[in-house]
Image 1 (cartoon, rainbow, N blue to C red):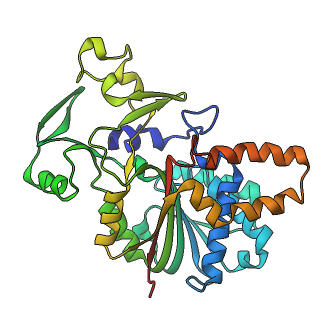
Image 2 (cartoon, rainbow, N blue to C red):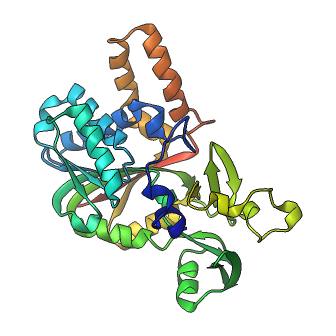
Image 3 (cartoon, one colour):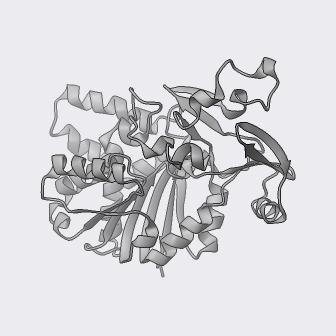
Length: 335
């Protein structure tokens, strides 16, 4: 999975279109009010005294930088004075993406906003921060576990074989008998813990806290979903869809459901508290989405309001993203 997404020719190493013309939609590509609600959460966190007005605002996995830019636009509307004291950072390992993000920010804000880049959390050092991420953990490479076996890749063939004792111990620690096991949650949480003394981290992703006991790994291409094993030789020919596995490799997105229990375990193991966990619908409303919409309604036409509300329904409707997507909020430094 790492080579598929992050290798030299990996899916995320190139510019990718998200939305109608791409392989999938995200909350960020759906409505600017997703970033607006998170900005309001940031302001509430500052007003409560947990973070100061000079904290770092750090997005991880920013793609083109739309989410952080939307947050800045709403901060300008709600508390413009803060823009002179907040420090904006994007964690981005790929230089091509950094250039794309810089270009977008220059086009959107000119010289009014200073954007800093770091390639990883290991490069970041700050006293306090508000971290934000949307759909990053579903893109962390994972191992596929089935009882005492794991999936191996040999050239172009895939097969299950006995895992080593170290991997078995991790699978037992997380209680996985069949499903995805991500080994990168713990190093990520450790890096976040070490880079900042006090922070809040808000992240959204699809998944659940319960163990599903099966595989969820799948491929997205042109808004079509292909269960991973229907593309491989690991199922009988009659069950396999007529698709060439190599035609998808590194050319389409591959993802899986996040097991939030595993994620919580990794963060708590590194001294970071789980502050809030909820559905995306509940989180956005509690962050202040309703108040933002009331303000928006006073300043636009009825047609503009209706258009934006149709987008927001996708974010909060339980039959779309509202229940399927979850929000987790972590904190370090809380007394």
